Length: 315
Image: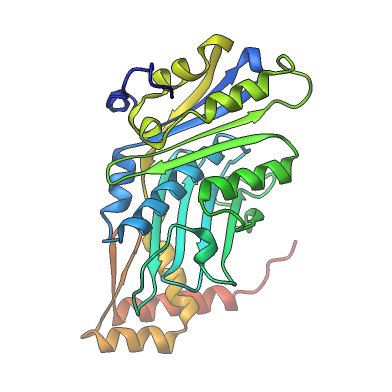
């Protein structure tokens, strides 16, 4: 913002962990704003990350939440970055219900994590994946979810730039996007021109010029109402709704049991024997531990064998 704007305050404390969709009526622009406080801190405290890795993870978490407010997501949306440098994996996920989780994995031999995406190595991949329930699915439906994935080019030095380019090219609509994160907060703002002739001729240009005045510190420090009013009040902002956001993990004992079965009985029993008769699986996202003794492991595979051996019923 320009020097005449009031200094940003921590007004975002009034706007904890929320996604808000809005319309800039006079400009013909739609947008999504996300602010993460406690949710981001709960994700971050699961592991110690170098500052650059933590900031990228916070931005990825804000992006995953933003995109659930933009695309039709009935299941979950994830942002995943894989590289062959110091940062090996970055993963953030947001569900349709507004629950988030995320993790970063670093190279075992260390090395400095760069925030420049172009330094992640020649084989680096950035993807947005949406998993929705199968069409016509009901509770308890064990069919595979409908999965959609888009690959994001790594021609930009930042996640904001990479995602902005992706949406501009994939949807053929002008798009602006800014992400920011620090040790306490993560936030994102996305603008997109409405299809058709909404707004006046200069509406998108005007909105983009105002967007360019927004600094990362202001995005982190201002609540939704303050941010939208200071940037776009002249064109009129209409709030279209939103949802609360929170940390939660989708791990469960049933999922871990399925993972153990997929490993095979010999390997699962060997893991238990090596740990004094009790295998322990720890979720890296939330820290929850699941323990299985030798008898429980044997029972898992007995049940799995009986399910496989059961004859098909006549239809």
